[in-house]
Amino acid sequence: MAHIPRPPADEGQILSCRPDAGRRETSGAWVLVATVLASGMAFIDGTVTNVALPVLQEELGASSAEALWVVEAYALFLAALILVGGSLGDHLGRKRIFLTGVVLFALASVWCGLAPNAGQLIVARAVCGIGGAMMVPGSLAIIGSYFTEAERGKAIGTWSGFSGITAALGPVLGGFLIENVSWRAVFLINIPLAAVVVVVALRYIPESRDPDARSLDVPGAILATLGLGGVVFGLIEAPVRGLLDPLVLASLAVGIVSLLLFVFAEGRSREPMMPLSLFRSRMFGGANLLTLLLYAGLGGALYFLPFNLIQVHDYSATAAGGAFLPFVIITFLLSRWAGGLVARYGARLPLVVGPLVAALGFVVFVLPGTEGSYWTTFFPAVVLLGVGMSLVIAPLTTTALNAVEGRHSGLASGVNNAVSRMAGLLAIPIMGIIVLSAFSGGLDSRLTDLDLPARATQEIEASRNDLAVLSVPEGLNVSEAAAVERAVDESFVAGFRLVMLTAAGLAVASAVAAGVLLGGSGEKRKGRVV
Image (cartoon, rainbow, N blue to C red; front, side):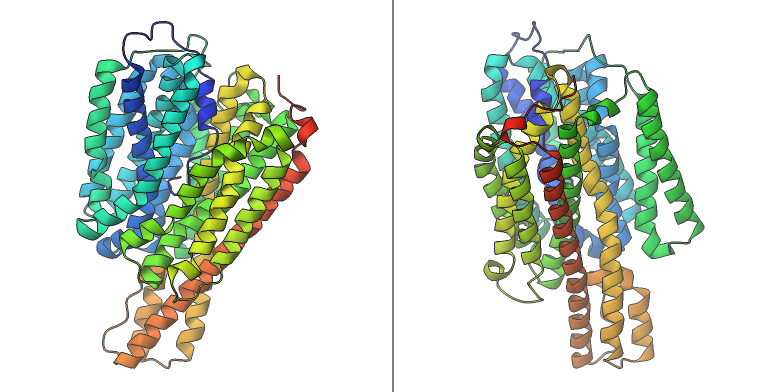
């Protein structure tokens, strides 16, 4: 997730690669070191950035829209180009593209750490996304091409285990660095990791290619980037500029037209990066619809959680990073067990029950106000969400891969992975509109009752887009300042609650999609794409 758990179907991308005959030049342990560290960089970056946002927003004076762009710039290029990044490695050499991605990611991380303003940070995050689109699929393909089928189980287990550890430690480490060093250290921590990856990869990873690789779908990549970028820009800027602003309307129009052209081009292309024929499978379509809905709710909800914890509940950055730790631990411990449920009960049961439990978790997030102990407010919601997602992640991967023949498994897993990333990418700005609308309405209502001086009211009005980081105007007495702070906090919580209810609705919709479109235990392999 730039802000969500590890996307589904990563293991499927490893399994889809053919082992390379000349791989025995080096030790497999070093291959795992390089790929695990590279994947760890991506996981850590995705989890710690959200924790850093409330702090960097305050220190850089960034608006809520600019804070959104810090996440969305990275997610946009990663989601739009990740399929192309994998294809580039198949054609030009997996090691070469992997190393290019690592170096680009590291250099962009330096830029992020040194960025003097929000604008430069956003551009640097976009470059990080381009590097990640080459690095992430490259690390999976290298594991798949190096290890034989007999060795892959252990290799995947090692990779998944360490990925779980980095996902667990990332937010806590990020919070510690933010608190004791600077938010800039969150990005600069990638530099020593990248240096180790480059040294190990140059020395120990053999080059490999796929002689039967599909051709690069450059038009598809351009249209996907334009389409997603246009829609995201319009959604983020609409609350700031107004929905009828010419730039917003033009951006949305370009985005929608580009996405329609993308679908048309993919249907006409001989080797598209996202083959529409895969969606002829009822099971594959159902798995991806579930992914789109559930991961949209998850991505949108988790973006705003650190803001609530830090800016409203006064959590330290370390505490905010650790607040989600139970989720990571639960999904790590239960996912393998949940994967076995498909063989016993079929895909439908866990993929209906899991989202419903996750929906209950989102609803429990609605209950806390502006005060209360973590153990009685957010902890129960985090646990429920973790249990629900544990029932989803592994069965969803199995379902997506079972829906197609083995020769399509790489494409199927890549598409499902991309869909999960696109879901969060699109959901966050939509959730941002919901939060800002609820915040503005609630703040107006509460300020009316306070009878503040006109100058103070005007200052608050001018900075309402800052949401919970909104500063109390100077010149107010102690009671007035406390009342404004309380009004700001309560208004943000009202928006946060609407986001969680929206996420719960999306989770329920994903459960309905699973119940309608996915087969039961006796139908696991019907509707395959051959």
